[in-house]
Length: 465
Image (cartoon, rainbow, N blue to C red; front, side, top):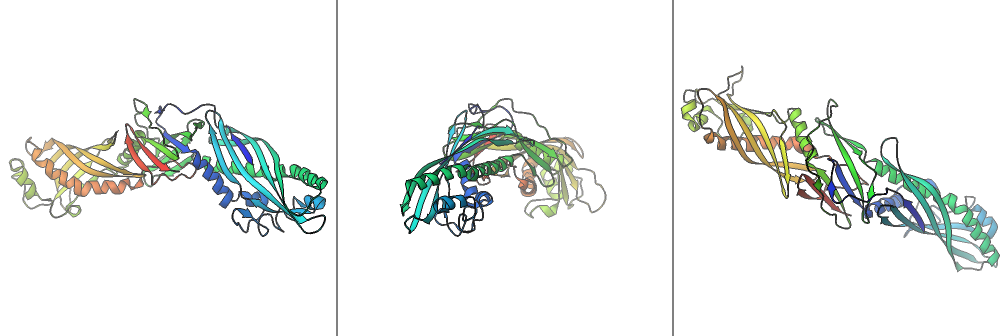
């Protein structure tokens, strides 16, 4: 049995309130256990520390693999001394089984259970087979690396040899005791490096939290750890800062929420990621800053059933545009001068986009004067599926900024403008939003296909372990 104590911090998670604007990750203990187990099964830990693995059979690394004739523990290897003393050599090692228990406010108790199988010739001839249980106990402290990531530091490692079982053959008690003493001396040097390698893998996975996620042409999001990890009895909690930068490297800063976010409780055997309103607002802010929310809507972008000529427009407001030449095609120029307002409420998400709308004749050359200039506010609903979001046009309210002749009631134009925005502008926004909402990477947990819940000022992603 290997016992590993990870001292993550001396505090337990907060009472469901996200005081900062960071992203809150609650990683179930099952994910840590799977990460370690997977690294032992398919990763390089055992290969690098113990030798070449060429076969795995029902959890055993047999004579043709790790502990076989040419392996580190075979004849002439670390356990060559065992053969000299008792005629034994190591043939098998049971693949370690991982179990762990979180200790709130203290650390993690990690247990790895394994058995070592030995074979040799008995004193009276015939095959001699025995197995020894192994218990490695390690104490690990938490520090901060030079990169600003959490790092696990091995402080103490001791190995205890458990029960030795004789499966076949005869072995005199003195030789059995000598073999036991030799194993007791050799095992720490053999298995403590395995523990150290396990920590290296965990450190690498934890280090992935600190990452720079590109947002294609918009900029990037840099994730950093705000505090030391906190521990409850079921999960590890990470408070992750999100620093959003433009392509030029400027930090994009938006107003912080006035009240802390009330994070819902996490169910057992699930991991949870809470993405604050700040990150959604920032993505739309980047789109606005880069001009990605502006558009010239020409007749080519609009289906034929949506009118886009001066004749159609005059029919809506004849008192204003009665003298405009008929039959000319129209161009709508939308310019968003300020960052959209994102609203996240319980089970509801919406975006409000304020834009200047210029209605002009669509001419092949020259710069025509605007027939109408309107100030519009587009309210769009949000359909979210991690990590992408898509928009649906809900409504468009407009007011007149200036006209070709005199002020008039713009109510007759709202339905027409809403149709144009729905068929030409919203699809364009959805293409721009294909960059998605960047998510931090924690212990390889895949939040891209999580169940999504909208709460007050945040979105919660939940994935089963």
